[in-house]
Amino acid sequence: MSDKLTKEPSVFIQFAGQGVKYMEDLRRMYTTCPDIRPFIHASIAEIKAQASLYDDSQTHFFTKGLDVDVWIEKPETTPELSYLLSSPLSHPLISLTQMASYMSALTEGIDQDRLLAQTHSATGFSTGIVAAILVSMGLPYDDLCRMAIKVQAMFFWQGVRCQESMLTFGVNPKLVTELYHSVEGSPSCMASITNLTRSKLETAIHSFSGNGNCNIYPAYELFPGRWIVSGLPDDLSVLNQYLKKEEAQATWRYIPSTIGAHSPFLAHAYETSPRDAKRLGLSFNGKDMKIPVLSNDKGEDLRALDDIIDEVMRAYFLCPAIWRKQISPILPPTKIRYVLDFGPGTGVASLTENHSASSGIQVVRCSIPLGRKKLMEEIRPQLGL
Image (cartoon, rainbow, N blue to C red; front, side, top):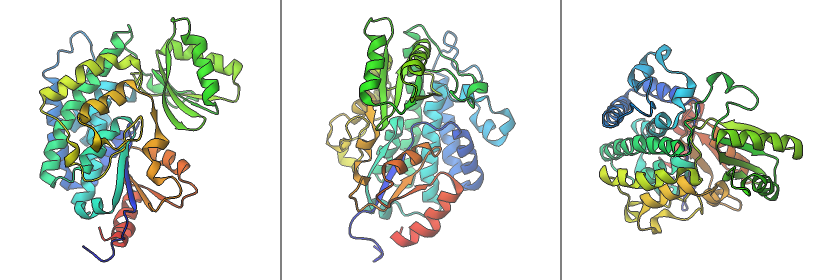
């Protein structure tokens, strides 16, 4: 190994769990990184193959199809945002986008063995945890492609099961594209609340959930005083109005999600998705992971667990998550110098910057051109990657 390598790992890797403009990221990688195109095409083909096995005649999840390859090459044919951000679409396609982001860095010359030798640990926001697990295995490129394609199949079914879960509550939420850029966004099953302490959030939620007619759950603690909550759209609307009257300092914005993740709303998905993964022959073993991957809910090293897929799904479907626990290795004091964020989008990178502002860490947005340039031209030679 190069003598430029530092004695202690100085890199942390992370993936997002959502990215509103993920199709733009995917299209950009397809255009600028020709070597990643075979992986993208094979992944799309696998997603379509799984879709052919699903009867959508009753649920109508895929009314505008899955012609992702056409959408990439002909942007004007891309469906509206509300369709792309529905769970059955976003689950497999965001997974594809984030893995294409990471793997395109390998095709451009990053040495994966050297990168992992320099990486302390990794994590992923919400569903992004699976991409972190794949990376942690350090598979040869062709094997990584095959495993990632199998993961696309799993995420196709996971997206379907999550949306089916909402149907068990009598709702099949539809986002309104035109409202996304409004102050509060399009009504959905999740919302971000800022400037609210934990005790005041719990008091507000209890005032609705206590009578059993309205259930809202804290889903993600992003930062002290900043939360994501899950609930049925009508219930969240009522909570929003309550906060405007009782907690005027709080700000509200809907998360563009058609499901209530990290809450009991996805119990059906937790019952069915592990079986889907088993049917597809997908499993992860801690002994195959070369670096720690920190779990959503507790920030624990997933390598110590027996059934990693079941644990990951339990945490995503049912359990509230805490971001600071997932990124605990970069909180001061720390010897980590770089966070490599492979997206999609830049929202989670900004969230991590808020937590690490006093540590001197650089958060590098590797899914966008400026961040990729920094990775390849500055960080790669510094670390001998």
